[in-house]
Image 1 (cartoon, rainbow, N blue to C red):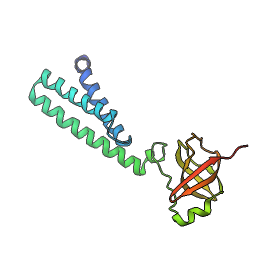
Image 2 (image 1 turned 120 degrees about the vertical axis):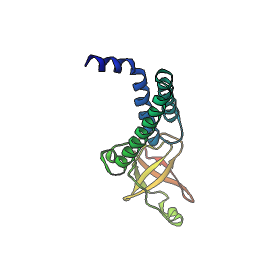
Image 3 (image 1 turned 90 degrees about the vertical axis):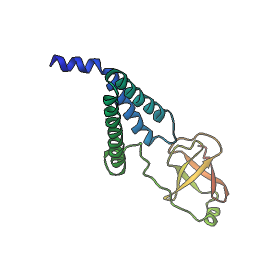
Amino acid sequence: MEGVLDVILTNLPLILCLIAGVGLLVLEVFVPGFGLPGVSGLILLSAGIVITWRTYGPVAGLAVTLIALALAGISISVSIKSAASGKLSRSALILNDVTQPVDHEENDALLGKEGVTATVLNPVGIAEFDGVRLNVVSEGAYLEKGVKVRVYRVEGAKITVRPIEG
């Protein structure tokens, strides 16, 4: 048992690089764009492979490369499956709300209507008018969820709202 613990402690930087790298790649799947988590995950996976290659040779480096790729693929697949129909699909990370398409000609009838913000408007978000959820834009002001708003301008598909005072 003591030998296994020594091996784990000796290879702790390698293990941490691989686990953190795969975790960051999974996070990148859910974060829009190609950003910091993805690049950091690739760097950590590469560092783990390089550490293995230099410490144990090319055969071990190739084996860790294959294991890291398989682990990343399986983790990403399981995460996507969970986001589609598992426990993750019920979390705040996944957007389940959809807006109703509205005919642009009908948007003119919305002028002056009152509704409530269904999401935060920063300045774009979703507001609900008579049970219909629509993409709206505030006047540039940040509005919290649940604020009463009134449509004051309609330009094609762009619906601009203002908060109702009082």
